[in-house]
Amino acid sequence: MLEAMTVITRNVERRDLPLVSIPICFPAMVPMFASRLDAFDGLARVVMYDDLESDETVLAERMEDATVVISTGIHFSHDLLERVSRTVRCVTFGGTGVASFVDLAQASRLGISVCNAVHYGDNAVAEHAIALMFELTHRVGTLNARMRPTAWPISDIEELTHRTLGLVGFGGIGRRVAQLARGLGMPVTVWSRHPDRAALAELGASAAPSMDDVFARADVVSLHLALNEATEGMIGDRQLDLLRPGSMLINTARAELIAPGALERRLSRGDVTAGVDVFAPEPLPPDAPLRSLDNVVMTPHVAWKSPEAFEGIVEQNVRAAVAFLHGESYNVVV
Image (cartoon, rainbow, N blue to C red; front, side, top):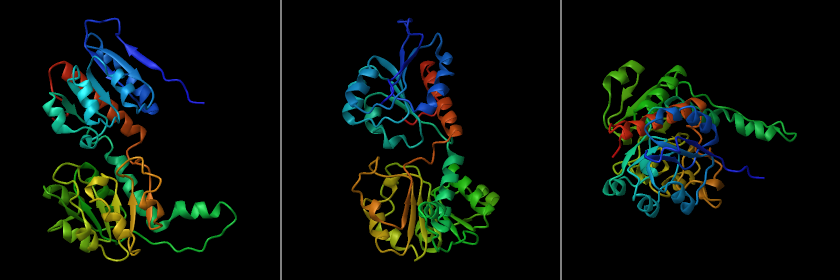
């Protein structure tokens, strides 16, 4: 039986105050938000719903009359954003890649400020990227599943030590991946549109002359770019064809960085492997071609879902909402 949805409120008797709506909330975040709602005392009314409703009609009703919406994962269709724009002036988002959830150009046109959260999941996502590398080489999960009946599977493993890791993107997550990989004895090469030479030197990483060079030389390529107009689809068949047999591709960033169908086409040749935590669309459809390939390890976009990351998301979303209500800016994207 499904548990009933609960509505948590603060200052609702103050009809003179603007409304902050939290239309959905991951269960683990509910107590984290609840413990911070006093930040809105004297500033706003707050209504929070503790489920993951996806019906747009219901979501629109939950955001009715709101000035600020704290969104922990709503995919705003053009219609939904248009419907709530009568009163909504700010949307704060529980993640960095807000462009996958809100059309920023539409929000700007409608006069809606959009804020995100940054660096909250650097460690969690970096560890998950390394975990996918380990699964592709040591196959712990696969071998565990095979042993569950009565089998004693015969299998070799591979080592990551001395394999070259190529990073595409070098923000907070990419830097943490580099740090972890260097601890494993992996040489690290990096391509970034804005290379930080000091950070490269500090981590003992080298700068690649081009993104193509990373794909051609690295044993493991890990993607760590933000999704925007410049990066959407920037990795296609040409780049993936540069991967050498036996190499690995890791994507814990955004699926849309890779052109539609390009990853499936490259994996179907059977000479490379991949570890993927992000998909387009999500949830991954039952008939998605990736599901039929045995040279890809998939996880359901969970790389960021640690308690520590949740705390960072909640703290930053509350700060952004409070800042907006004070006429100030915090983590504003548009």
